[in-house]
Image (cartoon, rainbow, N blue to C red; front, side, top):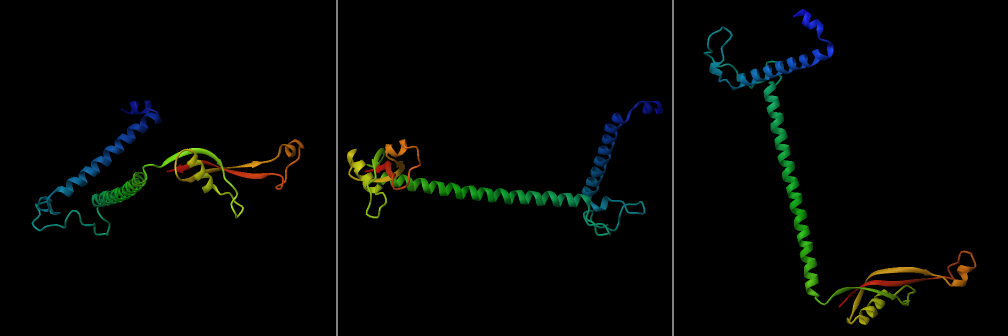
Length: 193
């Protein structure tokens, strides 16, 4: 046997040591579980005979105030399971709330479309006239574009602004100033009815 151990190098001995250590730990855990499951009357007393007086329960902490190993593991598993169950219920509650909100939003959108069956989104390109305030009046442009498509009214959904400069300014090769160029706004999509 000693010759065989001398032939083994350190690399082949390490897995054997790990296996022996794992077997010892498994034996200790099995022994602790077996002691936990025995009824108190079957546990022999210190004098070697069967116990006449009931000893303290196996799950009670030892005299130094440390809880038993199996009890600690059991509490840890129980607490983890309870936390997981609570987290799962919270996630389900959040998912149900999001589902309800999405369903309500879909009902509202469906009701809006059903309420206005003659409404259509139309692609247009209508220049917005200048309003009295100096800004673009895109509502008027959307209404004109929808009337041109055969509808009675319309609202602007999307607009596009462009910077327009005269050709002579661009050919001079210099940067134009604000007075030479103007900004034009166009309605590109309108909701027509």
